[in-house]
Image (spheres, one colour):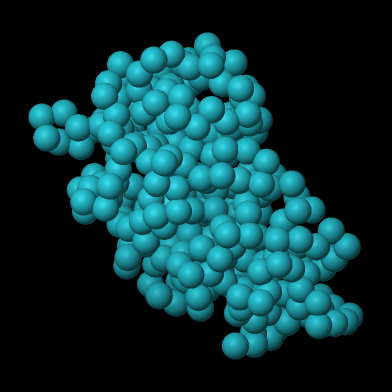
Length: 301
């Protein structure tokens, strides 16, 4: 599918004509190495396998911008049931900035989700927030990216069990209450590819927390990380780190979970940058953010 920039939305039509023009089209699997090269310009943490997962989650909702038959920009979206969708991975080649490509890609992603009747969510940096404010996005809550090298964490206080396929239904129900919608396809892709990084806590036969994680280009990234109490959350993270022992690690942690921020700072985690979760449309399914200790990343929520 080719999308001419002049017909995306009225917002794009307002931009000055470009010379030479660019077009947007749906992303294909053979585009992914070029997408990864663009990602490397930003020194983001995603791997080529992450791009494959993005495309598998929503094959018709990922787009590339082309100029002179060369990929110069990307955007990915994912729909969470019929409740809300995510826009992420808006990247523009450094040599083609300030031409309206990024805004056109963003609007294409938004349009794709709004055409499905979905509320749109994304995670913004303070710089990106200035653009999203003009498009009608509002703040939902704030978070921070935390980093650490060679984390030295205490022994977990709870017994943590590896997640098995028999646990998936229970985990997905628990996570849906926290997140606000089912993200079963995302969780199962994590559990399947990274089974040694996925753990849960049960108390009285009830799931009270879980954590999973992925390997990145330069850092280990725990999340989603969901629990009913700070004590359970801390045990899950400590257990995971004892098993994995990563050299570099990043965490995206909600600001409102003050106890976890204190714990992380006590163990030499440092804030890299703030993040703002933003919403376009009615936020009818906010979930339970007080249970969310670590997000899966700005690209998936």
